[in-house]
Length: 197
Length: 197
DNA sequence: GCGCTTGGTGACTGGCGAGTAACCGTGCGG
DNA sequence: CCGCACGGTTACTCGCCAGTCACCAAGCGC
Image (tube, rainbow over all chains, first blue to last red; front, side):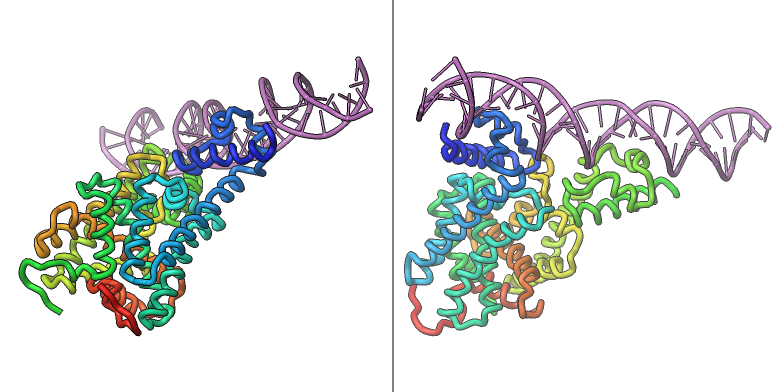
């Protein structure tokens, strides 16, 4: 098998294994085995376990961030922007997307390089969203950043909860609801009785 | 030193070490060393590393959940409830509270028991919040759960971003802003120009 | 059929860290 | 002053796993 093809295959297999088991539980032996190859081959393509992992997570991070950017750029209407972004999170979670799980379930909190990469998802996504907020709502950078981070968290945690909780809502309903929460706030939902402030 | 005191001390030291380094990077040797004691003593009090960690994280999880419950019970006004809960998250993050960090930065995604414990923070917090939503907004359980999870994520991720990003906002400003986002939604902020839906 | 490049392999080492076996000393009841 | 319980220690074993060393074989130009 030609060198570049092998490399791609190894990366694909490694991605699977890391997503399934996490960094620590995954072993280089298993990655090699599953690729139908012996360990030295793996080391001919990647200098070490950490570098392999870092390479994978780095592209995963970029892909998630790019997704957010695209969702934001897909429309000029802010309410629709919220919806599009929410849809992205929920779709990614529901599809068990590799990049998503690799990033959001990463164990390897010890390594600072990895930590930084993972944090980039929140910070760069927030930054992209914050830009829109600054432009359209005239808030300060700092304030916009905070709001944006909150929105990211809402999408991420909400989506994961929806999936794991075996909710009785369909994906579409969940997205709709989450978008409404983001756009109108919790106070915007119908009240049965009291209401203040 | 009497047995129970030693046990308490060991737990305190272990908490520090696990919070600082995470489960994998932490070693039983270091925990023992820092407690000024040799390893077998540690094993006289706890059957193994995993059990020690589980015990710590379990109480941490409970303490976070209790905090949320208290915040919700502190008032009858829903807008104030949102504010109180937000304040809890931000205060916990800003104070570098041990329980908080242990739970939200846990690496040990491989062990299912630990995973379940960590997930309980989101699910039980959400459940508590969802109860309020169901009571006051008349939404279905499933819908309320989803919204609640979104709010939890907003608080958690927002707070962490605010702290790590070295925002120029004070803690009070951040809490105010986050509460407003949760209550009124992103659409509720002043617009400079266009606005729809 | 010689040699050399390319894409491999099986079997090892080395270290780290969880967990343990065997031994120590001091105080206190009898 | 015996013994024994209790809180401790030193120095080990043992398994796991990242990373490596020495060795194979097929194709192919000549």
